[in-house]
Image 1 (cartoon, rainbow over the protein chains, first blue to last red):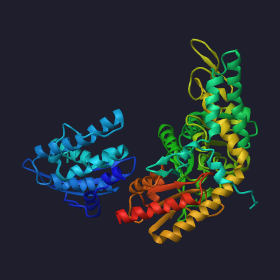
Image 2: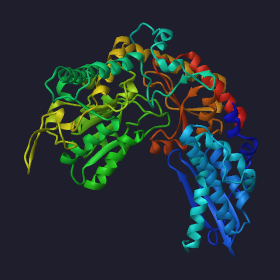
Image 3: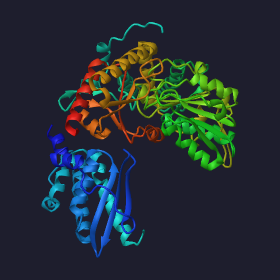
Image 4: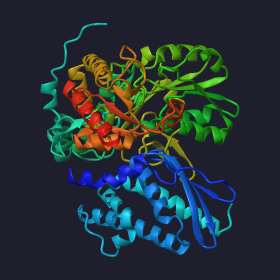
Length: 160
Length: 414
């Protein structure tokens, strides 16, 4: 059960059982964005507060599988209080971890260690790398990240 | 209930090469036939033999293999038609890609020419998206009103207001058996009421035709749609049956070769049915495979298959309750005459995807998700279920492994 244990690491199960930053922020001033996976019905609702170029607060509501919900929780811990620049960089790195593995899997069916991604930069989030051995579940892991990116883009564009 | 000779499941399992496979060091436990069935060796052999010895396009060449190919393809209409009691199988069986395309064919041809703004269509809340979306698309285009027969608390159709709901309805679309709840619907009763109200009846037979005896006349169907791959045939071929009189009055579906009598630069004349609805080279090898699949099922006997699956459903529901109790919520009616071998369940608070992922570690194949029935899932108040669906080769051991996997998922996520 190597791959399986890699998928459901203890830290993932912990964030699933006890999700961090759960809830909603008053909107306005917070911006609300929804992420939805039509394949499995998983959803996240992110309230995010951007102040002076910093993601000063965010809360997440939603329902779904352990991967989508723990990824959202891990993400919230990682990005809260960070500068937008750092948040965008983290989104980029995280999605890179998912897509690089996906591309490698497509070629020879074997996952390889990513070279261009510094897993140290990801901290606890690196626990989610086991997901890439289960291609169907990658969308679960990236659901909240795509929603966050969309939300930040909307804030930047002045959408309320 | 008539008594039937029980299936020799152990012997039948040997007919399915895929069942010899191991997954994660466990023998595969295939409980996803409602999604797509496995193929017996006879089907695989028939298709391989066809490609090795016979393949040629149909309805074109005059050489020997082209004649044989055409014969095999046309003969499949008769084989499939007989399975469902079609009065005139050679002329009433139309081959499509799958159930979805069969329903879309009716929407594009019969419905588009016979329905006008303000007309009503009655569907049910337990329909698969394939029997909802084509009608919503047409409703938007033409201006139809789409109504729904509600599902009651036990997962059966509530017919209380059927007569009222049927007022002004031109077409009723109903699944013969729910792909989520396993409910076998009282299609004959609904069809009788629909016909009295002047409506035609389209039956989604995707789940029932592979698992029980079906007779289109007894059902009161005007159209019935089903898929080859859910009845142990190959993917890529589906069936639409309709009365010849209906098919004769319907315009073509897709345009192209094979569906015409004559083509001029500014006009064409359509071929008679069923060719009228089969533009382009059809799924010939798939028809050969489907024919072998129907022969396989018929040889076993649809009544025996149904009896086996009913009994095993009854066993499974009782065992799930006995071993897991209230931790396991099962959707759909209790075991009985109107319950097919589709078991959707929720286990504690574990998400269906996680359940399915853990079950995979036990070699168990179940389907997690909304099962292309989102309106029904909303009604049930869940976003996803894990669905185990039975087949003629399923047995009590499969159910025990399923339960073992569920318990492990509960331990992991509890």
